[in-house]
Image (cartoon, rainbow over all chains, first blue to last red; front, side, top):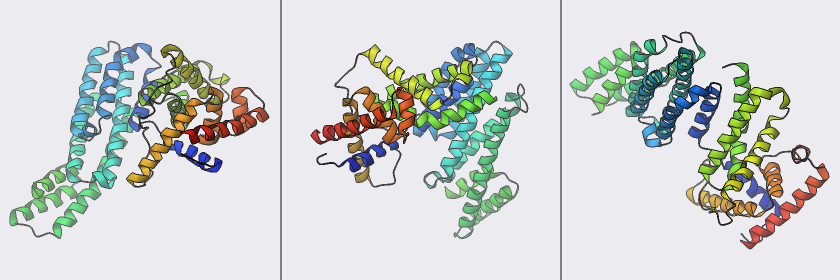
Length: 212
Length: 168
């Protein structure tokens, strides 16, 4: 890099601002520090679980396998319950995991909103994961009803519905402007019904059938 | 999340990029930078919980922990003068084409290598002022020296950095 002026050097130095930590790592570190560091015994018990999160989320391909990721997280819920002896420790571990899940759902929803991931198959996987959460939700939150963590998770789930609704609507509009067979037209009628009922995940499943 | 958690959460969000960058430029390895940055914020959180009122300037406090952590790292491992600087940092997509990105990465490598050749205090001052836009007065407080001394060191450090880069 010959004959560089001081002004050019300062400009080049400011380019180093582009160096940033991995987003997944930064989010998980924050979650770990704020959730675990207050209660040392839980920290020791939870390291394995957070390691699983870190390993899974640091691999982008796996990170977008929504259902797999979410099921793994709920597997971790079970492991946490087995590992934790006391109720207080279990509460802290659950809160920590719920915070991680909420963050992940929010991130995945944002990715889905981005053009590169705005496809029906990915949306369906996310919807499936959320359905799994909804089924487990009552059992999971029996110990912590009305907590900020539960509200955060509910907000994250609501954001998925808000993302899926326009996606389904766009697909319906596209299909309405496409030449369809009689069988496909019947499926599309059903898709419209499911959309009207707010059953977006099921509507997406039907759309995938049409597209196959 | 209680108010103490919220306060530290805001500090974390404000400084995670800065501290990571500060550490990364000194160690040239993403893995080590993440490890050291983790330690910095864990120590910061522990101190914050026990002596929050004594921490007047969280940024200066975290940078001080980071400086010590980097020193500890090299003390433990032994300073490796031949440490590779080829490992590319994770650079946010500046929205440019691949060629421009490659040029940017090349410049980053050269500058990073040059910074690492400088005295530790000059490294810190240059990073704080030109990367993090920290005012001279704040740097002076951080290093415990008069503002005039910092200004001279900054000017001298930039000139030396320029010479090192031109030799590359």
